[in-house]
Image 1: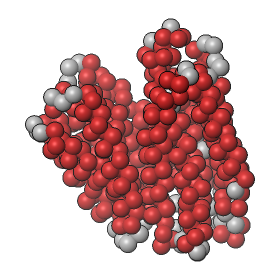
Image 2: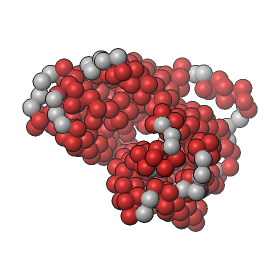
Image 3: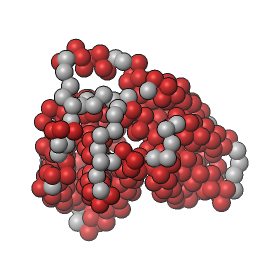
Image 4: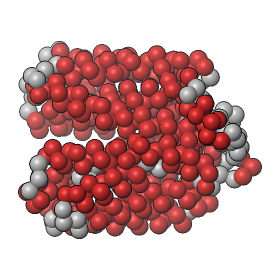
Amino acid sequence: MTDFAIAKPATDLRITSVVGAAHFTSHFFQLVLPPVFPMMRESLGVSYTELGLMMSMFFAGSGLFQVLAGFVVDRVGAHVVLPAGMALLAGSVMLMGFAPALWMLFALALLAGIGNSVYHPADYSVLTGRITPSRMARAYSVHSVTGTLGWAAAPVTMVFLSTMFDWRMALSIVGAGGLICAALVAMDRADLVIPAQKKHVSTGGEGSSLRLFMSPAIVMAFVYFTLLSAAFTGLQNYLPTLLPNTQGVSLSFATTVTTFYLTVYAAGSLAGGFLADRTKNHDRLIGFGLVPMMLLSLAMGYVALSPPALLAVAMATGFLGGMTIPSRDMLVRSATPRGSEGKVFGFVYSGLDLGALIAPPSIGYMLDHGSIHGPFIFIALMILGTLAPAFFVARRH
């Protein structure tokens, strides 16, 4: 895709900050429910399986509607779609605080997922269309970091609010806060609009879009995102469960290791942004990060490590994985025709939701059948599987 955005550093910083703040809310709301599951279970008299299915409804709505959201972004603009999606997500979470029955929570979770579906196509459409090309990867890295910070902030916030009040009030408070954020983003229309002279209008209708989605580079990018998401979801969600079995550490220490993993993952994303802005060989940067990450993941499952060594290995794993994220986004950018940013990013990034759906039942099945090392093999195979699609996309463009 031809570089066409030139802006002052201050303008790039302002746009990146607005989009990053919006992305923070997306990841924050993805994790507001699990911390209050024990209270919801007792209050509603439901099982953890039912509550887990509620989260599946959320990610199903997000993944299934993400492609449609991309078309809408390309048609009407991110300045309309992004705050609308934010409001739907936040409003649904706020209403969960008043829902008297489980079926209502399921319906609201689906609506929240639909609201969440707009973020990737809208965010990346704005960043790709407005940020100066020489600073693009750094903008992508900030976008990734703000999402990670949203994940980190949600559990602490929900535990605090539910302790101060109850789970219903906690959901209502954070939902109301999200609505305020949506209003603030809606007021900043100027930073989210892609000027008409910078936006090439796609032609060809549905048949053209289908051919675009079925092009080898876009299909391989989708596969890459799905496998990468499955690997990263497995590590992020299951390290606290896996490490006590494979390394003999306490659950508390395993949780601490996971926190450090996520923190250094964010630092790696920032560093990867600077590196990706200084090279066009993004596939090589991905390989340099993911191959040692795969080996370190296997080490956590098969090599007896002292607690300090385990912490160091987990941090190195997080840094290397995070370092590849800006290059991941740059690969998709390189394969995207101008004017199709919303639909392409929406389609490709729906692979993240698919990967997030694949990993939990796969790893859960292994654990239910007594395989404590199998999940690390699964994670390693997912990482290994990303390499060929990444190199394919880079070589095609």
